[in-house]
Image 1 (tube, rainbow, N blue to C red):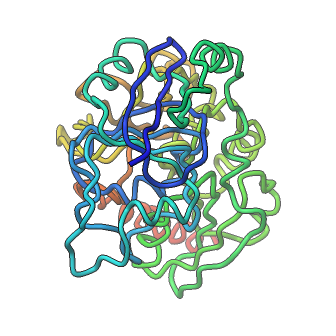
Image 2: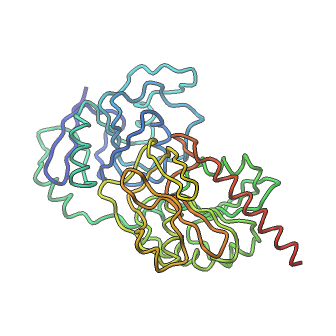
Image 3: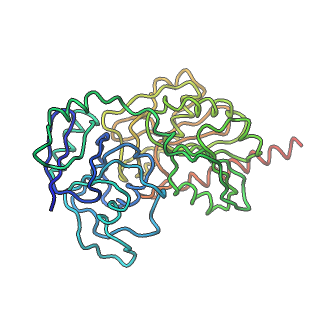
Length: 366
């Protein structure tokens, strides 16, 4: 068994056992609290550029299967676990987690104190780190200096958004899905409702989107700081009031910024499948799946045409907004789950109903 180091930018060093790819890798270390769903987590484009830590101690016990991917190419920089299951047992298992990460050239480390690492992230915020082989040539001081000198990534969405548009045909409502780093669970939910979907890149102009005459527009999840996606903000600003919209995660943030709100970086983010969110309109609380490092400033909504609809019960941050004039609503969490609870899956039905109501208004005016 080869040893591997996880070196944090504050100089903390964890020594563990290597699995997956043998290469070194650098990224932002974050943690996620889900007890299951590691395959969906690994393949979620919103983790682009990050070394993902699982707080649940045993990972890999049901292996990797062909059905649970949220994207074709994983975007994580590394994977950190307390204990790696060497012999997974599940009827859907096609290969082990170790074999999958090796095939995708993603390094992993096991056998470290993930509780200690999580406490560091909670107290200091998300930190930069390097996964590297534990050999005599490693100079920790040089690695720390390299980490501290490395600027933050600002091109997340450009790396995970598709380069060209593609269709996902159906016979129902016509939806343009702007892909900032989409989890395929969102597309699956639209397909279940027989939507005729056109998936487009993040920088597609508003005029091109409207030329397809959509019944509605879906703004997907994605990685990074929403302020870095200026082309996406400009596009959404030009779409407001033209057609019904539904935004998820980064899509929620981009829509809010396009409406005049402001975003801020959370200390360590919300990641996992057990985050309680309260719907202020109904008083209902849902357990939700989340993966984001930024949030919308609730106070900044006062200067916009947006109203707060959902809040996170753990820290009181914004989890959803609705436009006061136009048929647009967005949520910070993931109603498609994957992984996580499906308490808020009904929001896709609300989107369909909203498009039907707007279509009915159009017929009346005609």
